[in-house]
Length: 112
Length: 177
Picture 1 (cartoon, chains in turn cyan, purple):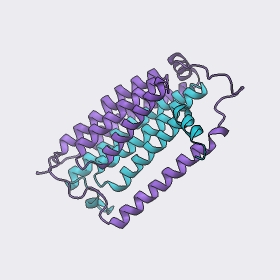
Picture 2 (picture 1 turned 60 degrees about the vertical axis):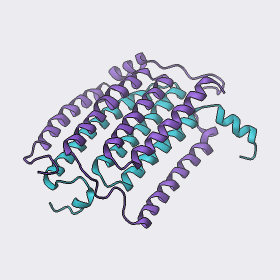
Picture 3 (picture 1 turned 45 degrees about the horizontal axis):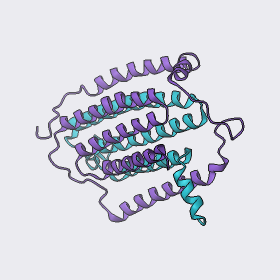
Picture 4 (picture 1 turned 135 degrees about the vertical axis):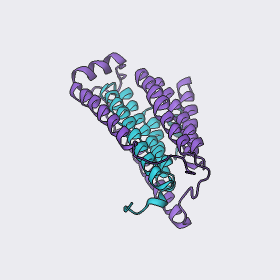
């Protein structure tokens, strides 16, 4: 930060760190979505955003290290995330049928 | 500044903007559409990073199937109004946002401070990383990770059966019934 030319050069020379910072920002935005929103579907969307951020981390490392293990891990994460989104939405549908609401305030107690 | 850096910043800005819009917009349908846009842009970033197969899978599976599932479930609910969109107490909201900002700052600080120490590959720092292709990915998937691959197929079967059985309970799905 003391040397403006070095800072500018490090900003312009896009490397692994830039992708990792983008991934960290996406992860935190997804986490904020899960924390502050009360609609259960939007909370699931926040979880999907977090999983996408992790995928970006894996793909960035795979590219900059020349290692295909990162891509394999990304593939697995994608499959599991799709399955988990399906299960989460099925649970949301079942909860909606029971409570007629998707706002989590209405089913904060475990007794149903 | 070369083209790839420009493209990175363009996509990064759009991705962060759409992610914030996903979380902040009050209508869940708009949220779902912004998330689909984020995933499409992420697929472009993956293709730019040389992972063309993963980019294609991201487009087909995430933006094409998962987000369509979200939108279908939202259409099924037919919500007329949102009772409470975000956390009620302002103090709690501030605490959550402050905690999230602290985590973001810690992560970004850790990434930037450890960047000269990160050793991503063996060998001299001067040589460039080997280019990986879909062939490498598929070779690994069918030799080293074959068991995990097959178990994943089994998991998808179990999840499909489970989803159908969980969502099959009696009851109407309209908000007014």
